Image (cartoon, rainbow, N blue to C red; front, side, top):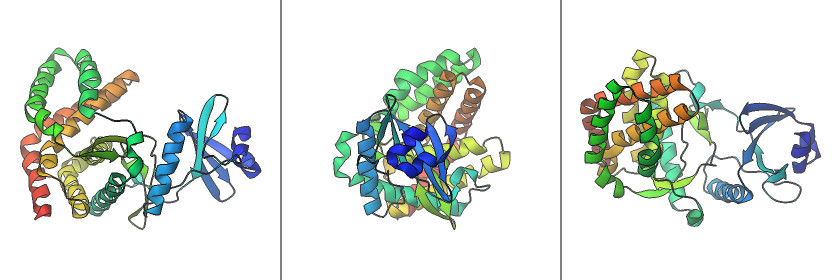
Length: 313
């Protein structure tokens, strides 16, 4: 590890490193902290560097990849590629005890400003596409069906029919652009109740714009679902999230209509990911969240539609 870090300069070779998750390390040099990450190839690293540089120049709170002694924003080591960037100080969004209306509004407006910048990025064509509907229909749906019990098969069939009837045609009309694709609370850094950093741009893709908003909403629900009180507060949280976003970048009526259906698809992805990882306990929770959302649809759908409409007015 020290030999790898020394590629950014001799001082980095003296850094203390601590693994955080697979392929991610925190590196400390006295009071300075950095994040080291593994990347799939140099092309992805260069695309990430160019994008982060452009976002920084357009006042987005991101951390730039550092150049190695060779003058490139990645290091090749033992057949793998790595990037290094300064750690953004602050409070990670997933560690905040409460996620208030002000938190939701701030996160929503931050995402909208990010989307506005990403939509203007000229080099967007170099990024892969992400088709959520295709990903679910060809991967997550079959995995969830093969796992579910006979009792849940009926519910999944009913849900599948609802999605087919309500989402298929509107889905094709949804606005598409570069999206973050991993916009969850842990990838937001807060200082003084404001977002001071947005992390992890290695999953940026071209996809439906509303995905990031739904992904954040679903991630918050997943992290609070076991707390009945906070679960019941989720609808008002979503309202503030949408209001925060729409004040910066109005949502289309179709985006409001499909909001819940996109959350269903995201939950199905969570189910499949956790089953593939062998975590059936977490997959069962994801299924419970999916059906809770579906059971609340008659209440949630008009609430979301109304929120999108009132902000536009």
